[in-house]
Image 1 (tube, helix red, strand yellow):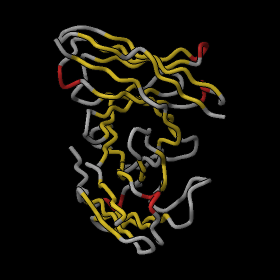
Image 2 (cartoon, one colour):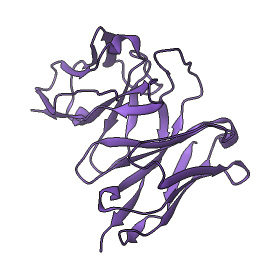
Image 3 (tube, one colour):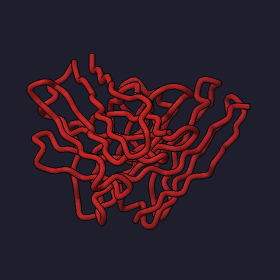
Image 4 (cartoon, helix red, strand yellow):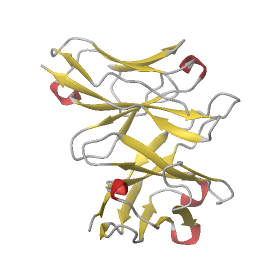
Length: 108
Length: 127
């Protein structure tokens, strides 16, 4: 089955740029989605189709995808961005949705 | 306003059964594909099952195949998850999530994301 690998944690100071990676075999050929989940809340879609943003999501959130790595980039990080972030793809070989293990973003 | 409200969670003994419901409102439920996703305490997200808008296509994770059954009633704007032979490891918050309307599938990917999620219902399997 397809495996997505994320770093368990990323730390960044306010105002700096956070980059959260999602590794997978030839993930660049897949459409990657990113979700933000704050404690006690349901996940929220922040980036879909590698780099598109749903309405209401700040432009500070962006995504890219190439080769074996997809990346969620958060510019000018704010305290309110502190959350868990998950990447997601569809595995066509198994007809399963796959989530990465999640990355906890800490704002120092 | 799109709303997804899960119900039916609770405490159940190992080997027992439970039926979760997800009541949808604020959109034309019958035209959207739907999913169940779960999250064990302190753990990450795990996709559980998918059902197409007309119930013609169903996919399930290997961990629940043969035990859990996804279904829907478009007349009642409701999604269901029948869970049988429950195990300790099924303990989790269960979310229903809507597939985005626009998307495409190719030989290597499908671009549909989960654009709305419910708040979840907690299922605890314990003796």
